[in-house]
Image (cartoon, rainbow, N blue to C red; front, side, top):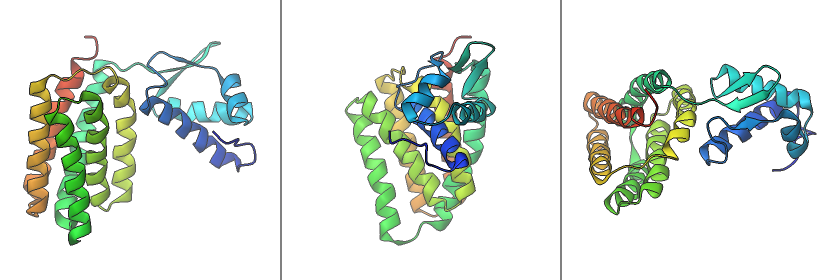
Length: 220
């Protein structure tokens, strides 16, 4: 990563925070993994103060834990964390699907959604669990973008970061992949039909089912 030392302090703090979030998304940072502020500062060529501010920001967002006299670590998710995250996702992404159904106009937007759907559908059909994780995330992000509500997009996108901690260890069976793919199909059909209520309901059901799968990945 390019040095951040010459960036404005606020910008540098956000960039360090994004660096850590991307590490979680990519599986480079696992739940419970230590984050050493001095090492991050040296690697990114920023001040220790900038790193500490970034860690404090992520602590406030619930992505890391600040440990007294021991630095920080990627925060493991509890069952309550997963439940709360998916309850919020259900509401936000349900609204995003409804807005996408209302706002979907033009062949380009329709093709963008169809392309995202087909990629996830292909991964599910071939049992490609690793490919499905990324294409499923892209499918959901596409619908969030098509909602044309930047605030909703930002809020919903933040909720997906900790879920990557679980998805990296998730092994979906064929039945779960088929169920997820069928959910995508119903969501797309409702959005293409311009049916806001059905699009919202289908997305909420899809997220609810995904949440149940995630719950089995965390300890009781």
